[in-house]
Image (cartoon, rainbow, N blue to C red; front, top):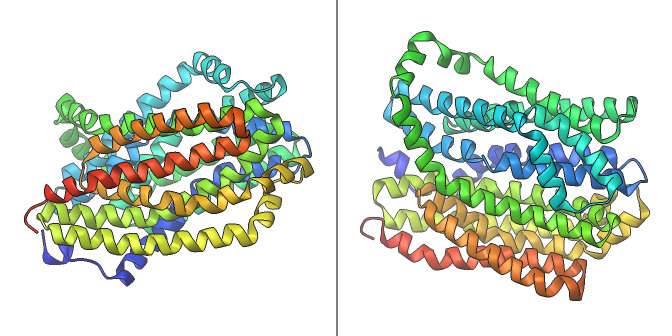
Length: 442
């Protein structure tokens, strides 16, 4: 590894790296925001709630397999650094094959998955009916949605974040246009929102596969070289992703429970929480740009056995991330009413969302440390603590929810979610000294 690769980056270098990654990350939740915003043109909160329930089910399904993205970045970067063209191709082809397999299984099992998922969500009958229509179209594009994770990660691993940003913007623009056409033009409701998003995901995947750099990985000679690794390489990939898979399942189920318990309070409360959650998730994706920077440079420091560099990376990326979190909190505080109005026209939903706006304001500051530690531990490939601490934090959230929800209603639900973020931060902070000690001499 070269000195340049292991050097501690300046704050300016971190910002230059993080900015396009932030913007690319920020476009990810825009699919849900656009669907919710277009449905929000209707004064009926049941339509917003239907998209909330349907998109939550899809989030649980798709993000359970987000290791296709999280592991591909590191494997691609390692192959690029080693100058190994075969492994560079394998870093794309193996997760693409896995995405196709998993996506096909999800399509085949969509009926029992829907029965289980919507049974657990406990929403009103009219909400569930509309949510199932949204889900039906989105699940049909599962192989393409999962393949997009791997494709974007492979490009980011080669430091082509601007290209990824362009593809994400194109997908969201297409989604907005198609969803508006199907919902506002043809009056298809939540089913139209699901169809528009599914088509946007499919078209983006096909366009990315058509890029020359991607298409070259499917040359017969490259495929033969990659396939020579066979089952052993797939087994190694699955072992490496086991902890990530379990961690992601716990995280997505925790967030899904937030939607589910909001629905037990009222349909309007579920819709209001969905409006706020769209902006919370957007803020988290934005802050993840600094977590990605911590992952890249922190991983290089771990690979070089440079404990001092690892600590410096954690400090510099953390300072910038916290400053950005404060700016986001200020934005939510000053423009919260406008952000809510941007998504829904329902007076009832707006009033309920306004009442819980302080929780949205608090969320970036409460969550930023957890995001940064995620990046550092992923970069160091210390995934077991990420898995274990996520389970413990989810347990604390469940206890808080059991105690606070009956007493404080929706505010108790939001307080439990904030506690979940705090516990993740505190528990990973307790593991941080051991990680540093494991990295070479100081």
